[in-house]
Every structure is written in structure tokens, then in C-alpha cells.
Amino acid sequence: MPHTVRIWDLPTRLFHWALVACIVGSVVTGQVGGNLMVWHFRCGYAIATLLLFRVLWGFVGGRWSRFGAFLYAPGSTIAYLRGRAPSEHRAGHNPLGALSVFALLLVLMAQVASGSMSDDEIAWFGPMTKFVSGATVSLATWYHKGWGKTLLLVLIGLHLLAVAFYVFIKRERIVRAMVRGDKQLDAVVPAARDDAGSRVLALVLLGVSAGIVAWAVSLGS
Image (cartoon, rainbow, N blue to C red; front, top):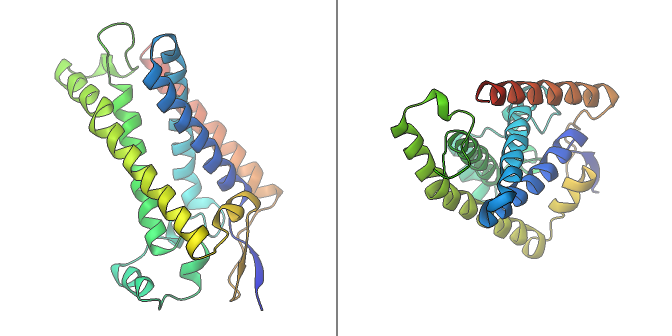
């Protein structure tokens, strides 16, 4: 008999959809350019804030949002591919999904970092350009506009294809779970903490993250 279990706490769900919105905004404003570049930078600062929050939340968040819950050994990934994974490895991020999550987080971090050191040599430059050499600025700009952007879009495309596979082929309601937080599981697994206390903690961590990003940006003003 299926069990309804809270897998994704509210802070994790809000982080996910806010990050989606900010990435879309960043890509669109970066492509259009011109006066919209001010919003490209704002989206970048928002993404930096969300990433910093997610790193912190990965240590103190709900049971299935913590990095320790989806940091798998190679053997676990092989077992999952062979259909022999234990129930807990299918509750939150499965081994393949975990690889996607870590890859996206790392590439986004690199994109934010390179963007902060980029200069279009016309009107816009990142807040960290004043602290690095001209050669570093050139390299960061080249990566941010080229390989970094391409790699990010490829990973997003693969992520969307994987979601479509699980939704339409395997008939798993993973999108619904990221909206409502609950999953229907065949086995009983621990539920994620998602109460007022954890949500207040998440709000504090988000405020701390925003403060750190604002401080870092102010250094380059």
C-alpha cells in the first residue's frame, strides 16, 4: 500500500522554482542585452544568493534536502541502474538525479563566479573585475559567454529530458512532488522536517546569504 511521505520541505521547493525563474531571466536578459543587462546582473546576484542558501541548507535542511542524503558511492549508482536500489535511494534524489543536481550546482557556481569577473568592454562589468588581472577578466568573460553558457544550457536540457522520461515513461509524479512536497512511496521512509521552526531557519539563512552577496557586490562598487 503506498505511503504519503513529505520528501521536499517548503524551503527546498521555493529554492527550486526561484532558481528556475532566475535562470530563465538571466538567459533572456543576457541574450537581449542593452538596457536589460541591469536585470541580467540582478538575476545573477539572485542566483548567487540562492546557491549560497542551498549550500547552507544542504547541511541543515530537511532529511532529503541534505547533501548526505544523495551523496552516493559508485556502487549505489550501479545498483540503481540494475534496478536493485533500496527504497531510500528512490525517495529523494536517486543516484542519477543526484549527479544532475551536483553538476548543475557546480556549473551555476562557475557561471556566477565568471560573470562577476566579466567585462563586455562597452558598458557592463562584474563587481569582482577590479580585484583580478586583465588576463583573468578576459578568461572569465570568454568562459561566461561561451563554454560556461553552453554547458549550462546542455545540462538544463538533459535535466528536462530526464524529468520528461520519469513523468511520461516511468509515470512518476516528480514535478508534483516538487510543488506539493509529498511523494507516494511503496516503502516507509523517514519524512523530511518541514515545520515552522525549519522554515524560520531557512528564512534566516536566506537573509544571511543575501547579506553576504550584497556585501561582496558592494566591494566592487
